[in-house]
Length: 529
Image (tube, rainbow, N blue to C red):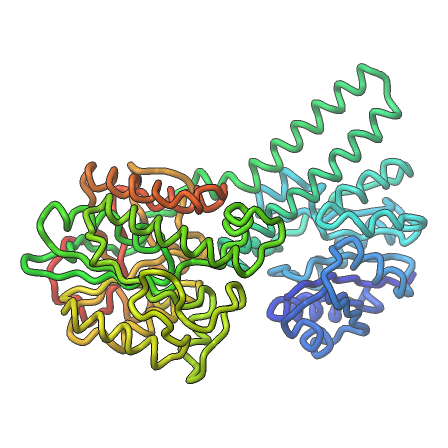
């Protein structure tokens, strides 16, 4: 009885080789077929190098269901074993365990369950690790459009055909969460897409059952589906919204503010300054420490904001420009609420999501959103400044010479956002002797919980608890400073229209603000916790 191993993969170049090698080493597997589902990395080459017998390439992402059916159409085996491409800890013996009930005739389909994953145990129907007779997929073309809901649809198909299904425990196997692979923002989008596909399939299953059962059974099935939906959402998102990271990182307590200081914040986008140091700015205003702020871009690449502001479903360049103007006004208002004078806010008007390209270019870079090549927003420091590295460096140097800061606060170099890393590189080259404090916005598992939690501390993410060459310090906020920060965040109305951004911004309203400082700057005293 020949066995074909099918592995759908989307941008899994770093993870799929281990899965393929496990399948190659399994004596029960006769062939391995990988489907690169619109991957933009080196998944195809890595899969071939790892030993896949065949790699099918989709030009565009078509979803898990379409990928599996495409592989099944070319598979030679009577039994198919389906494996996710991002498995961790998978061994040849696990694959043999999964195949055993089907090869022995005890079941038409076996479903692998990770014994060390509580969520997997609660929702085995979502497991992508399956072994099944290929006849179960006969005349099942509708599965191609199921996306991440493929497993739900496959289970429904098995019940309709009265196939025997067994669960097989897989000890030591796990897979990475999407937020671990893609980062918080993109990972959350992927998980929301997956949840949407799953819920769609659950609705289809419920509809099918209503056509087959009487009213009593319809009510029972509806309650069961509703309960499954609730548990699915709870399991997927509860850790994000409810759990805080363990207080394991070494964090010292220190105030960046000293008598006679002059503070300069340099940030990539409108609202970054409030996220990172809104409470500190409010405190500085109360204690008489002057604060100036540089905003390098106008944050004009947000498609949701552009659609709402421009009132076009498909946004045009002019809509993105309008977004930039709106966000500039929101920044001025938010900083006014923190006591920062308008003449101490410096807008450069450079291209959002393109700062890394600007820093690498001697010729003007074109914004992919506004299509501008020069600073064209009202009130910028240098109207018509070209989007080039020399022009950007000259602008920051001009502000630094004018403000003469003793403290500069900017983005951390290990932030996931390329604009944030670019701004850090720019500041590092021009900060002179100013003390440097950096803050984090985008990182794996940060911030947690993803909601308003003003009585809880903001803690470093576990993956960055001890960044090489850096130390974490916290600035404790008074209740008044916490309220100042929340009031300033509310000024960014175009951003809080988005449910995710509303949660993200609110998540930084805590009883402290968190900064990473270079270890060579640790001469200042502080208490440690």
